[in-house]
Image 1 (cartoon, rainbow, N blue to C red):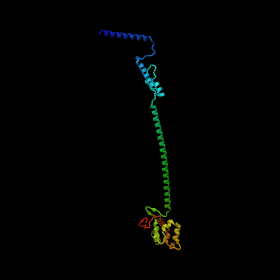
Image 2: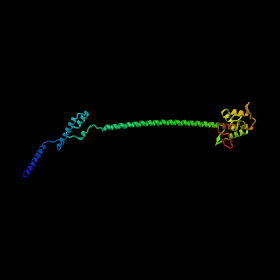
Image 3: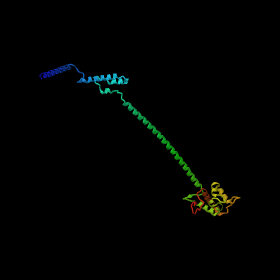
Image 4: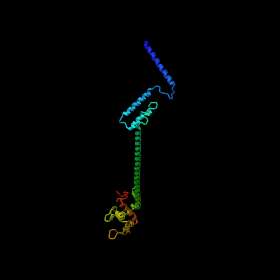
Length: 264
C-alpha cells in the first residue's frame, strides 16, 4: 500500500515538472496567432486527407475532371483543417442541369401554348368571317325576295287583306258569272268550250290583249264582241283582277260570298 502511494506521488511530481518546463518555453517564444489547444484535430485531418488522396490515386476509372475535383476536395487549409465549404466548392452538381432542363421544357411548353392560341384565334376569326358572309348573303337574298314579293304584290291587280280577296276581285267574280262568261269558259274560268281564262291572262295574254279580245271578240271563233254588254265593259278591270287571282292560285273556283277565297 505504501509503495502504491509513493508511485502515485512520483507520477504527480513528474507531470508538474513537465508542465512547468512547457510554460517556461512558451513564455520565451513570441506567438503570432493562437494555436489549437489539441493537436489531434490537424493530425486527424492529415490522416483523412491522405486517405482521400490514396483512394483517388487507386481509382483507375476516374476521369480527368473527377481527378481535378478530388484534388480540390483534398486540399488542406493553412492550419491543416479541411472545411466543408472548401470540400463542396465547384462540386459537379446535377441539380443545376436538371433545373435548366425544366426551365427549357417550361419555355418550350409556353411557346407551344402560344402557338396553339394564335392558331385558335386565327381559326375563330376565319369562322366569324365565314358566318358573317353567310349571314350577309342570306340577308341580301331575303331582302331581294321581299323586294320582289312587294314589287310583285304591287303589280298585281288584286290584294289579299286579312285572309280575304280585295273588293275589285270580288266584283270581277260577280261580273264573270253575271255577264255569262261561265257559259263558255266554265265555272271559275277553268275552261269548257272556250279556253281556260285563268291560264290565258297569267301565261299568254297581256292586259291590253285581254281587253281587246273581250271588247271586239275573235273572228272565226265563238268569242263574240262584248262591247255592247254594259256590265262587262264597266268592270273590265275588275274582271281582269279576278281572272289573274285565279291564275295565281290565290282564289279557288268557288263562291266568293260563301268562301272568302273561293276554296270551298
